[in-house]
Length: 481
Image (cartoon, rainbow, N blue to C red; front, side, top):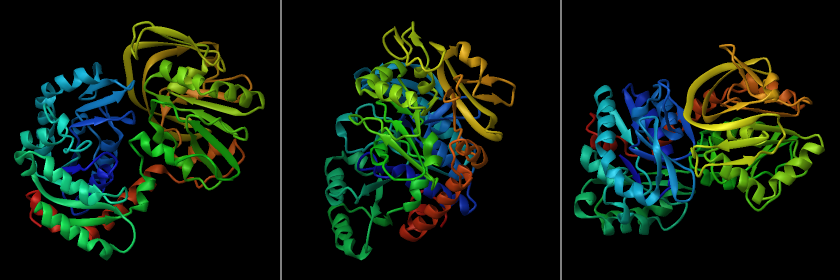
């Protein structure tokens, strides 16, 4: 089990890299994360949903994602509340304090999912959440040491040297952990080192001296990780618009943005300047296209969008002849109204939409989770739907997409400049993305995102092979080196 000294220390990438490394050695490998918190989710083949990181790790293992790989998923809808997903299905909405008291009841569910993966694999690599050193959350824990002890899984602790104080983070974790939890840790790893690794050798020696934990290696800064889908929205603050290229595409950074990896393929295009616009900044007047992204709380984020003044910017953009694309919750916002009569995403209510598409949306308790295929700009794509609500109205008579099952999906305005749909993953196909970008007047690399991700996983696995003590890690996992 890979645990970290904090969030965003690189656990997800390291697990993905190790999954690919051991899969390349011919082992049957499975990823697992007991409890995740993310609005970036993926649809499984059996119609469930799990965290995007575990879907990526499944790709690294060369196996389809299943709900057992992430049996508990929390999708934040507010600062204090989240939708609870158990084995891929909605199981209600919880406030943070109430969930902390009730989460221990999910331990059996989590361990059962783990045992199923364990039975079918040579190796299961588990990702923790946050840090085990958050001892205020230890009671009832199912994400870190609570799971590790219940399932009997040895732990390796990761420190992030890029953020600094890595010695204090690892030594401090050793100091605050209870004896039983501390005994689960079989060694430590350092992640995200830049420069000459010999310069930190004394630091690594000091960590060993103060903790007694074996030093299992230090990973360099993995540039290939930028080609992988990110799970946590914290990374989006670093991806702001600003480069000068032929076409500028921007996405407002909504407070509950979801499935934002939809736009990763656009960031790799040399003739596209893609970036997120953070709160407090206007949508740039020279944007060619504004994309309204998915969100876990459509009504709340519609109010957030208006509070930023982005609605005014968007109307001005549309008047200038600019294009707008809405994806999932962003599609719902583009319509005339959104109603949530049953309080699916929060308090029951209704709001006027942006009115850029002649459709209306009613949120319902039934959640659509399915893989879809179809054509975009004449080329085939593979994507998925993950949403609550039904959208209807005159604009749907001009659908944005036609799926392979004959279903018309989405809507397009009469002038063709405003469009929206529920499908995620539209731009992953190189050919479909190239055709779509051609309508904006630019050419594309036309690279399939799946191939780019696969190549990045192999690059990361090779880097970890050199950086980490792989025989020692294999021994900790009970494998023959």
